[in-house]
View 1 (tube, rainbow, N blue to C red):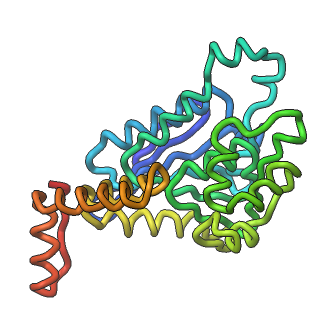
View 2: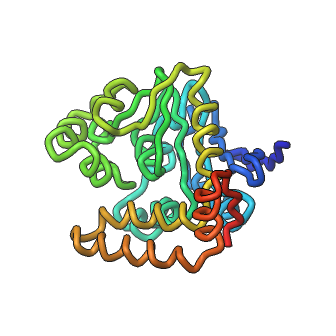
Length: 265
């Protein structure tokens, strides 16, 4: 069963995944290669928040078209802005809400993922790319720098020197190079990348949603502090799971050599 709601700039769907669902958000501005304007990002955040509230949805996929995940931010929307107007509108604050989504988000990327498109993919937890995917932070070519996390997330994945090269030259790089650099999880033919992303989402959806949530929190915590702080946070989350029904079910199923059925309780 597939349930679909259509927005102006995106479409959303819930697809069955065993006893649960996965949520799919598709960017849908084909005439501008899914350029990310404020209206689209507002709709995307609203859709992600709705999936996050829906207990039946256990994992989320964000995708675009085969030609373009998102070719960048909408330059027409920003061209005539000033420093003061950009600060007052603070439209990038909308993007920041994505990091508050508790469920895992998989980016299924094909074609252009440049500028804001690359930044959006890096805000996700897993990236599955097609062989035609092209990543990059080309903002330097139009007299600005990345503003939605590109300099920070790219550096955390690639290290200072490679991130510096790609940010200062604005050079795009292929899916193959992205895989070699550790930016993406898998690269597949264009006819398979979206199905692979959905398959991974369904695999995650079969796990305990409580454990998945706390595991995501623990991995992300590793970027925020020292190793000791991260270890303490991980240990706390590990102990917390022993108050869940899913922990009891998972361990009993393991001992009884059967498949666990997780309820999120």
